[in-house]
Length: 519
Image (tube, rainbow, N blue to C red):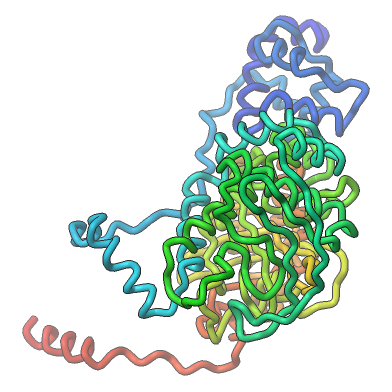
């Protein structure tokens, strides 16, 4: 009996296997159709035809099965095998972002926190903006950086047009009754939130109820002009243009803080402004890159961090949008300014940070991709596979970083990355064994070394399934061991040379010696 006649007899069973495989990899029917087009446009099925295949109403051709085998990195025999795999593997990372319950709980009641937090921030020198950014980041991570209400609001205004041309964005602004005014202001030096003066420029600001002021310098960069205008459209839609928001600034003083605020400590309005800045920036990204078409766009370009250049989307927008639209949920991103200040950070997979935007530390690990890129003169995106050690916790990441310049001409580094462990686990690989294999190779090379052949095959397979091109690029380079603090370097050859072991606190020694005598 021919294979085709056999398939007709098993159509429903085969459809179930394909549906299980698609859902296990977090793909919609539209996603899978786009992926098929990438592999073989001639034989790629439509969304409706894929649906009929999954429901057993149509039989896939052998050519289509070969396409699916390539996408999901399966042998052809797997599709003809009559055994069903076990239920979908839980691909949540072993150490996702979680909050630690604090005791005694009554001390964290709302009235006490409302009184204690401002004093805490004042004593530590943390500004309202910095505290707000910490709260917003926690909110993003809790929601996997997905906010459907903001998505829907943006799509209702922009009608899911993609890509939006500059004229399209101006048309939306006019339709909402916004009046555009232009001004000329050059860059200036401002230390702002750092001790190091940076070039600073006021890009734009909103004047209630409906005036948007744009710096003429934005006319030289359509991507930035589109984003700033979309950001102010967001303020009009979400807050009826009440004007309670910070100007859009690049450089020394971070956007989100009221620029008329002199106090270095907490101010409730700083928190409001920071939240509105986040809301409007998310709306603007969703307006310029609506979820479904942008998700398909990223798939066609294998998630390259600079793929927005030809259609006038900033790299920052592309990077921040990836976690919100990708079918794979385990992302992180950084926007780093020298010497080590994070203007933006999302760590949806709980990645321990080497530094943050509240205070500088004296011993950050210098082997993180963003640190390496800050010190280099590279102009093209670079990929890196990293084994991150934090105590006994081991994780495996891949990221793509690129040097860029902001609107004030300051150098900074944008980095988007994923946690590889859930993807390896979903394909049935032993994650711990793979990480140990790569770590052993790195330690044999002094901290960085080529990835062993077996691990390389696993990662290349995962890269093809996820359709993230820079995983394969990272696999071709040396992997490296990273950690949150250089003073606790986990490499066999310590980064800082010989480090004295930490002395046990004398109080603990006294307690333990007394207890030992009585036992």
